[in-house]
Length: 341
Image 1: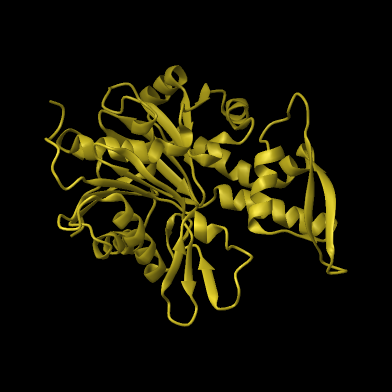
Image 2: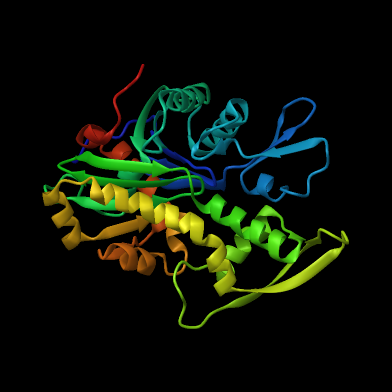
């Protein structure tokens, strides 16, 4: 049998992302896939909603309700809200309240010790009996089906909501890794800023995200797209709609995309020659929700002259990889970061 025997504790893997939180339960697979948003009573601090229900309140909640994202740039910015959200999701996923689960959580490659400790503490207070940590890009490589134990190097680029992580793995370890705190949210912000500057139109967070999904792209399209956008006129204060094209949205996204490309290039430049040669053969695998941006694989191939492909299940690759470590803990524990406790 591969790895250790399953225990009644039903251990968990958690991808606590800026945009979404996913929970993998050993023996069950992904049991939670919710936005990383919580709604709190502004007066008492009580949890009113989390996940999809809380995200529906963004931009719509009355003054007595505070709707927040507990993570910024892939790390905890509001420890109390993060703990409440984690406790809610863990309670939903574990079958027994008597046995506390072992938890593997994912962090950006360049997380600081303080930021990592905040995440570990939040998970412990939320109900974990022990917390292990794995780099997001390493988990993504495992979840994308790459053989990180092989002598031949593999390279993965994980583009999440708040961070983009790059890692080169070989022989079960990380040879080079980098992280930049730019991701899907910065792309959304760039779209909102463009509409504000060019059309004096104020957009909500959800509208900017919809534009990215509808017409966003990283490379010129064979047939460019258009969509109608509704927002509030900054001058008159009344609702107004405009039509935007994929060309102008791509132009708005360019600074963030360029920063991500530069991070990947810097990681390649830092690789030993033998591993760089391997990557020319194996290519780069894209994971994370941001990997689904139209033409991103083509853009990176154009910039780097290296084969690039999108993972089969990019949005879930990180939690699936962390889940593999949970299922086969003894075999995969070499991929985990050293324990700080």
